Image (cartoon, rainbow, N blue to C red):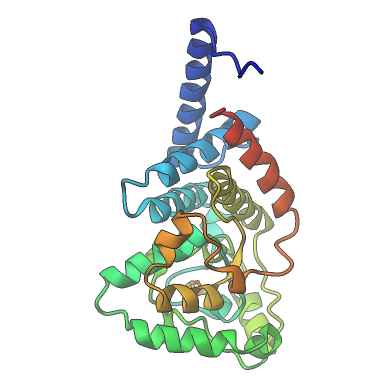
Length: 273
Ligand code: SF4
């Protein structure tokens, strides 16, 4: 049977033009954030630049670099929102650090690399806190106000590189955050558009991972940290295609995420056929 025919020089030239334009759109988002409205080409372009970072396995921190890129686009997007001047969030405010945090594998590896590079972070203590928190149900975490394992003396120990699940939940209502914390409901008054931007960018990071054959799910932060802190080869194994965080997988996965990850990952993989 005849194999696929090689593209003609004209087809190849057109393909390269499309790839170049998509990458330009992705790189523009690094400066300006998600465009509004977000066109399909712009979203695909962002996924493509994330995929490029992840595929660059000659760089040992490729997963962390892809997570950093996605977080940077999210920050730019949130920073230009009309509500931005009213955001009450700041380092040291930790009402929302007693709720569940959803993360992707590249974000976990970004945290581990930061922890490895920061001698003041006590990794064994963080592992002990992660193990203790993952042993509790989320209802108990909220009721007993059990903090995130990365919260130390009221401060986030990884604030500059905190996961998108923390960055996307911004609030203009500090009193509402305090009330939600005190009554243990976990119903914090977040800005929906910012949370939605976080969902889009995390979906793209997962799509970039899936398009390369890497495991692409979301995980509960404490459980994922307890694995990554205890298993130093977790990042290499994940980059080899292993589902290293299977035991930390969130069930169910965030609503609407699986469908968009499937769609975008197929489109990204299709660019390389
Ligand atoms: S990672 Fe930092 S910002 Fe996020 S919940 Fe933990 S302590 Fe809070």
